[in-house]
Length: 384
Image (cartoon, rainbow, N blue to C red; front, side, top):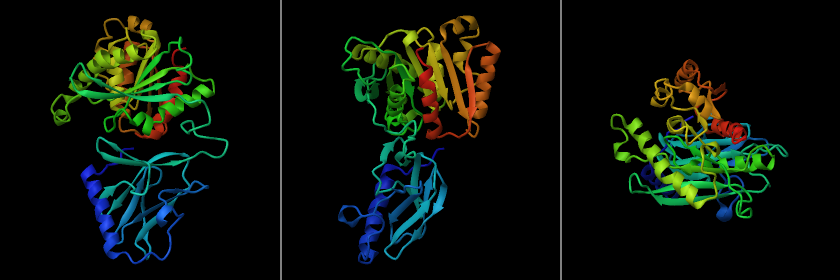
């Protein structure tokens, strides 16, 4: 599910405006609202033990405030005598959910929440509901050995611009100094950047938990920035293909060499995989199927796919050779995803070409909760 986000300037403006409303119009505080923090502030969001969530926002002069949350849709909030709007929703299933406020038509993230970070559309906030005691979610932090996530900066050989990649190394990497590891390149969607597979996708946490349970091969997970083209030109005609071509060059000419120079990874197709969601799924299809000599393990989550993808055209001359090189081609999408028809068209072409693959349609839409589940299912299949 995609939620529209306020631009950074607008978000800053409304926070200042809300502060102004509070300063000019709010009566003296008579009581604290919700569990206290230092200075008498309130908690928002407040996660209750029964899975319910209470959202709060101080906006004395606002006329209508709602919370928009992936878990419960849009919920109208009520204002108390102190100008604090609140609503309790749920209970909701354990998970991580996008949430924001609508204040008289203006979308903002929760100014009281610590779970707010930037993306390409402004700011983004979320709320996390833990699993029941003794039954944590697959993407929930557990007391197990943890790997490390390094932010690695580099200069792109394609654009000569400064770029960034997140690199997950499995637990024990620094101690087992002679061991070399397979590597998975994990790609994000169009609204996000290289930080979101750790911020919202919890890729490192999922990998740690699966490793602790003995379900996966220890591996590196490399999360590059999928946007290489100049943002001012992204809406030009043909920009999607141009953007994928630039990403492919940046990945193969800059990111892969950087990883293989700086980390102990195995530098061959049998130990190299690529997977992505939405736009990243389109990129993983293009790069992976276009370079089977470099990637034997390929996946696509809710991909912006097409039965006419240029990568498929390259396979028509010799599908049998492609099948010999492919270890895995894994495709999944939710039945309520707006890209479902495109994925079915893509898979139909795979069937016609007799390209070996695994395809599944699951419950869910175009949302991070779906993609985290796919990653937890995909990782144990790799490098066996």
